[in-house]
Image 1 (cartoon, one colour):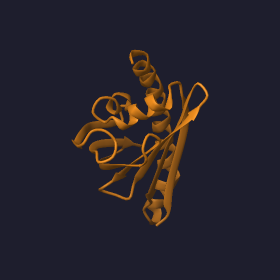
Image 2 (cartoon, rainbow, N blue to C red):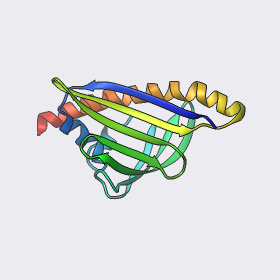
Image 3 (cartoon, rainbow, N blue to C red):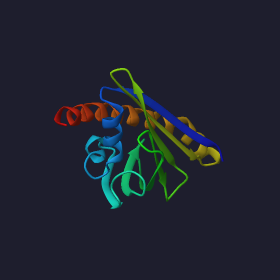
Length: 151
């Protein structure tokens, strides 16, 4: 079983504190910048940072699957990790200060399937996921700027 990894980052035009708050607040902010590929988003436990449990449906490359993510904060205020309780998938969100804003990265890893299905997964899933994450980062940037202006 091969590991599959997708990492995407972007400059976000707000302070690291605002960017992180938008990502970590699953009740008020996080659902508002998700692309349409995410649906049925629910907060099952908690709502902000570590201890939060969320569920949603995700659609990439024409494939829809259910996710149930448990959130940890290995570095509160800087790194937040969503671990899927239904699979090996794990996504780390990292916010790093940069002059006049932040660098936000999404880093997703999972154990890929074996055989011919695994070959196609390793070839095409990263392409689709990168496209989705670029869209999400663009939406985060626009949304977070609005949050920053209203704070």
